[in-house]
Image (tube, rainbow, N blue to C red; front, side, top):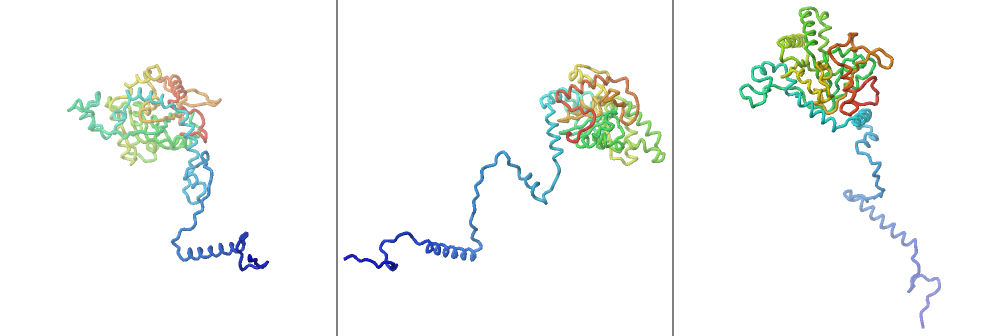
Length: 375
């Protein structure tokens, strides 16, 4: 006779039905309490790892620095947005291939190692080197290695002419943001810094301007500082003074000695430089560049050609020969009302510079500088 359990009895059931949920919940809860107790007793035990799966964000991924600058209150905040936007626009303007072609031409005629040498090396150069071959006199096959140049290689350069077009241009900050700034003929700068900038690394001086400065300095030597100030102020921001026709003329060398004496006398930090060969003899470069050989290229044009040998990207300012711009009078200089020199073909030079700009070789700025345009 088969055994039949009493209905309702839970002591013995040979065939179990569905498990009781409460019973299992109590068992799991107990196990959890035990695990938590063990974890609290052993702080070295790593916490449970939580893995969150996200879809990869390929298109909107930002660098860590950008995230930190945006979110972290103590991360150094430097506003590079203006410079980055400006540089992007500037870089799009330049044609690197054409820049290289121009450099291949200008470097045949200009070389900073030969053409921009510390004036303090002049006596050594005259004694030991042949200026025509730039070799040692005692060893004609060896290059002149007893002189030194302060010029290096620069990414961005500004060549700042003295044209009246710079007045009210607000280009000063843009000019000063370049790696290297070049000016012609020692113009006054600090008084006009908003429009022309305040930095100068190299000043090219032609022979006529050098003589005028030399005579002016000699006329105020020994006089009061107030009397000498108009001439001494020329050394407030000239960078390096470089007379590119110095080597062939005893008179030019004497003029430079006066300038050098004034610099030392008034404790200025300006340095002086000279060329091993006059840049005036390098006029053939413009025949290759522009198809025209000018008898007397301007100091500004020579500055652009020379800068191309050691600058990757050149922006030029203050080169505008016309008497009117947007119905306003434009003077020859931004600092006086002198008339243009008749010895230079400024219209032809301007056309050449405009063509170089159109070809992406230089950047020719005419008129006001825009806040969002780079250097």
